[in-house]
Every structure is written in structure tokens, then in C-alpha cells.
Figure 1 (cartoon, rainbow, N blue to C red):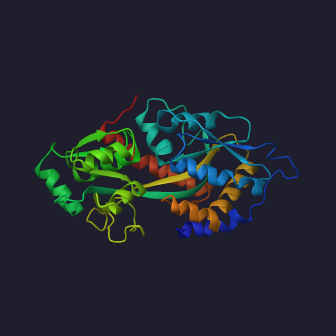
Figure 2: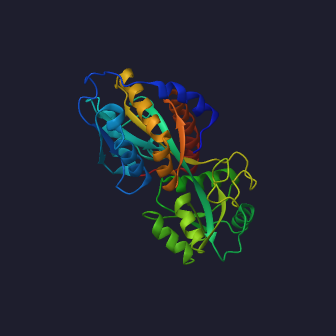
Figure 3: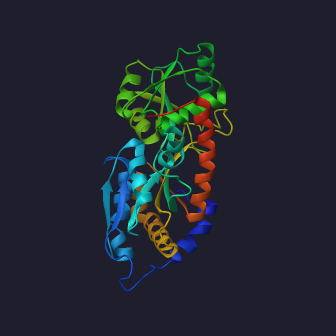
Length: 322
């Protein structure tokens, strides 16, 4: 379990919180947890892990509702518009800090229309090439791309996804000219990389790890600030020579901006206790992520910093999605 100094300092207050509106005043019925994606991804896994333990924390269960669409924007917009004081959503890097720059209208302003409750977990991405590629380091990939502008290609799990924008950040920082080939999910992109139809990929580390362990891909760098325990021999981008490059896909819970402060505090404390509990933390790590917490103020600060970061990258690349 990864806990930073900030999150450790924030934990005592969060863990000490007791449910507000006790004696049946709140929650009056099950808490609706909107997942803005289809079942199966980590957003869905996290919501169900939290939902099944809310009964013990609040006296009411969490009921998961999958509402996919518009790269996660539809479910977040529905949460922002909720008025029942019982609706929250699992949010991540993409739908809070990337989508506002990629879509003309997401239906919400992440800083005005939503109440950040807590961050729960994060995972990093990994850059990989075929196992038989002559590229064995990040610097070799950059040098080859610069020597062959417009000729190398990379796969992503979709336009506007975290893997796509991780690669755009690499382009922004190094000036390389490479061709983006978007796919509908990780699997087809991986298949084309293994088959030699694209040159490299950046994808969520759990997806890359499966192919590395199968001997089909070679990971050459990870996007976190520290090496991942599942790939201890793979350097970070910083260690590989690209200082200041950092990308995490983080996951947390948000509610509508009009959610009363006492309910926000209750939910933040309850969810933090759940994800830092040994049983849930172990399940999160088995799913390929790491427990990483931020309280309400820390979450708000993170959103602000990430909006500035990804806004710069997306505007520089001229990216827009319909």
C-alpha cells in the first residue's frame, strides 16, 4: 500500500470521522455509486469494493450503476446534476482533468459542479515495445523517432485516453514526430504491436505486465515517480533521462457541488476507512493499482494541478474529440 506523507497526515482526521446525520437521518436509503464506464475496468472494481462495505460504515449499502458514454463524461455529468444527496461517482484522471479540454461540452465543470470527496488509488502506465525489438531504452526510442520523423507509430487504447495523452506528453517534452493509432481498448492495440503493425505503446501497467510476463513485450519505462514492484527492473521515465515526466491514473469519489458539507465529511471518512483496510487494500493491489489517498482539500489541489498540466498538453497537440 502506497501512502504519501500528505495522505498519512490526512488520515487521522478522516479516520476519526463518524457518520453524520445519525439515528437514521442520513443516509435514508442506499447510496448510488455511478460508474461512468462499462463493467470490468478498475473504476467498476473500486466502486464495488467500496459499495459492499458501506453498509457496515453507514448503515446503508452502496448500489453501483454503470452509466458509460462520452469517455466517462455522461456518468460524471449525471452525478453533478443529482439533487438527492445520495449520489456519488467514481472519477479518474481522464473524466475530471482531460475530458474538459477534449470535448466542447462535457456537461460539467470539474471545479464548480463537483465536490471532491477523496482519492483512493492510482496506477501508472508503462511504455513497451515488442520483445524482439532492437529498442531497449527510452533514449533509443527517442533517438530513432527523431531520425525517422513521421515514420514510427504507437498504439493507444483510444483517442483521449490516459495512454494516448501519456504519449502526447512524451511528444510535447521531446519534440518527436510519431503517428498515433487509436484502438477501441487495449487488447486490439496490443495485438497489432505484437504483430508488428505498430512500433510501441503506452498503456496501463497491468495490461502491459500481462504481455511482458507472457514474453511478448518488453517494458522500457514506467510513468510513475518510483519503480513499480511488479516491474522492479524497469526504470521510470525520470531515471531513463526524461526529468519531470510523470503520469498516474488516479481514482477517487466525487459528489455534486451542492452536497452538504456534513455528508461530504461522512462519505470521505467512510470511503477512506474502507480502502485503507487490509482486505480492500489487498484486493486493490491484486487488481493492479496501489492504495493512494488524498482528503477533500488534497483532491481539490490535485484536480487544479492536473487541469493545468493536461490543458497545456492537449492544447499544444490541438486535440479535440466529438
